[in-house]
Image 1: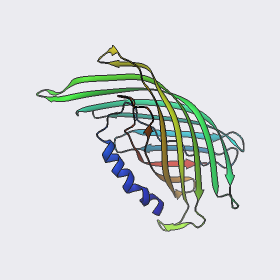
Image 2: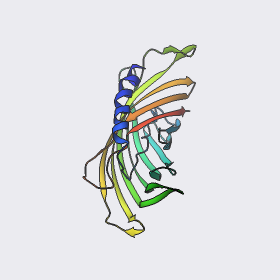
Image 3: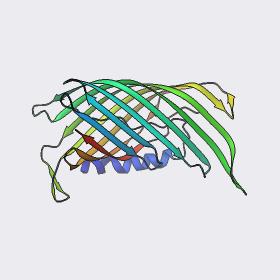
Image 4: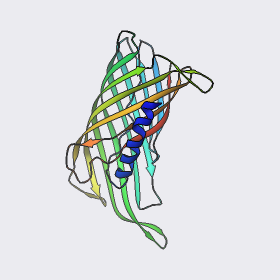
Length: 244
């Protein structure tokens, strides 16, 4: 729990700072399956304060090779000054292995490809509600590579009337996001691309056998100085995961 609280304050601060940003891309939650053996599976769902819903699924095809899929969807602020809508799907392949003397640590390396669509509408208040000032829409593709390192606490913690397992870890994702199409007010506009560094930290607490609640915090850094496709959305989510 100390690991969770350590990053909570910092990410809330980042969330406040980034709330005024208007990036046309919102990152999903990186998959952190923590697979250990062939035949294991993983399902997870997460949501952030803006209503961005992320989901992940993974399966260990062998003792070291895993297949994963991710997706996310948000439709936020329709009756406000900024309406943002995005969907994203991606799939990948990876390698995992247990490390350390006690084999309580897991190292995972994944790479994959994704597609998505985003719509951003600036509005202003009017007597009849909100009217559009400017709209921006894009179709985009994404290539990513990520490294996960996770560990299981040696001693279980006493909480909720029993002994519960606690896992924690870090995922660093490198992503290249590029526009396939880009329109401003329905007119074609110059396309942009960006390279993102997305470090996240997560803590996973066991609720029941296989079921965990997960807190994830992080941020993204855009390497290109773009006007629309830039950094500006922190990762700050709560979710549920199930390993089976």
